Length: 138
Image (tube, rainbow, N blue to C red; front, side, top):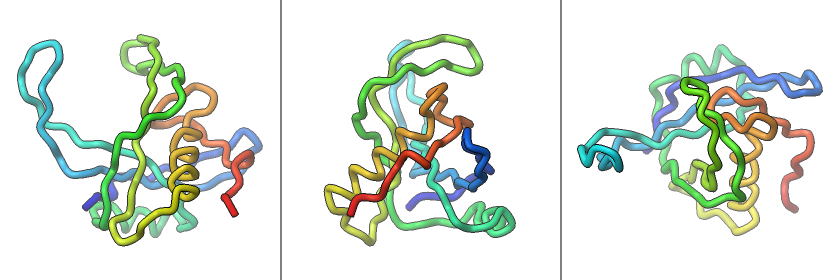
C-alpha cells in the first residue's frame, strides 16, 4: 500500500497549472553506508491528478494499493537543496498500482513522467513538470 502524504500545485513554464499528489510507500529499514547503522525510510514519488486542490487536501492520509519503486533512468544532475551539493542520479521512483498490470508502453510512460518532474533543475520534490512535451503512448 502507498499513502497520500501531500499535494502540490505546479505551474509549467507555459503558465498552466495542475496538481500533483505525493505518494509514500511502506516504511523499510536501510543500513547507512557511512555509519553502518539502521535507519527507517520510505520511497516517495509524485503523480499528476485532475482533482481540485480541495479534493487533494481530503485525500491526505488515504491509502492506495500499489508500491513506490526505484527504477533506473538516464543519468541527470541533481542539487541537494539543503546542502547545495551537486551530483548525478540514475534512478527515479515510480508508483506501480497493485491492481493493474502495466504494459511495457504504460510503464515506459510512467517512468518518463516521473523523470520529467524535474526537467530543468532536476529537483525531486518541488521541481516543475512540463507535461506539454509528453504524449501518451497509443
